[in-house]
Image 1: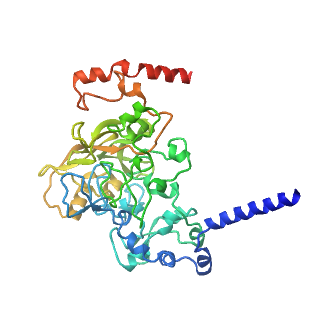
Image 2 (image 1 turned 90 degrees about the vertical axis):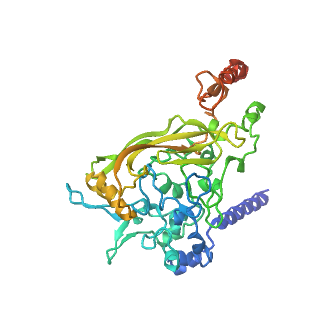
Image 3 (image 1 turned 90 degrees about the horizontal axis):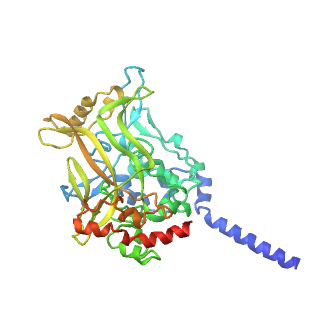
Length: 455
């Protein structure tokens, strides 16, 4: 009996050892022997990967866009060149730079939209060739032991602004599948600070997928570093691959036939993402001074799970006007479903001569609050000679695709009560239809049984 127990123990021990060994990165011995020199080290086992990465949105910050109105189908759009009021700038006018010194403190700092770009800034957004390939920061996405203190801008001996990287052996020995932290280091802080742009926390308490131990790339599965994205009306650039709930869940995901019937016209997100958060409004014409004496655009911000969405029909095509970016669709087009959105309002300067939104270089207002100086600097960079800045608001619909809940999902009464979350009139229903849709006979018995179960 003791021999059998010992044999079983050794068998289990071997199994654990084999399992642990399988998780060790195959290139560990090479890195320990030769050190880590960036992508050229990774290419020893992954030849050609760096060149392919240069063709992705994460590097180019732009792509051709086919589902958005008023765009040139032959050009690429994205953070590289787009102007809208969540950022009111882009990589062209707000490239990584040292801003003017604060008049009060005499100090300066580095700023720029592309601080999250996985390069060194010398080989910049959209660049190509051997130098660009060698500039890729592989470890910022793939290391679980990355020292983010090393990833900060500095001036080299030629006076060039360079984005630092952690290329230590310690970081290189901890490579693997990107974790949630790897992704959220950039994506959580987009738009000017933590939870400003998207307003979602991907944690065990806020998302059922995170509660199951899933990470971002379990849904956003990449191939050749092309990462699938959803159809957020505000998110234009994409790698040509998409992700949706249906990738894992069938079109009849519920045990309840009534709920399954709804999936033809109601998006999964509508019931399973009942809250959102983040910035609800920004004013780029009014910058506020912080404790460090630098300025930031004034922002109204909500915490995650604090904002109630707005619901609209969406056929995955986007209306794009100077004062409005949002979903297109209707209940009658045969393609649309009702989706939840966070509405964001942004105030900035428009050109009174043509009605177009003007960009802003953040460097001047960040130093002294002079917003018109920022507009003038951006206009010079973009070659705009004739303009007349006038303030105006832009409305943007942000898609709600994270913080998925099962326990707090909307049920029948949440939508079909007279004071329910769905505004049936605005969704295109007639008075007769609304009266039928808000009749308690639709939900009373089902909700009564559910109440008995809970009590």
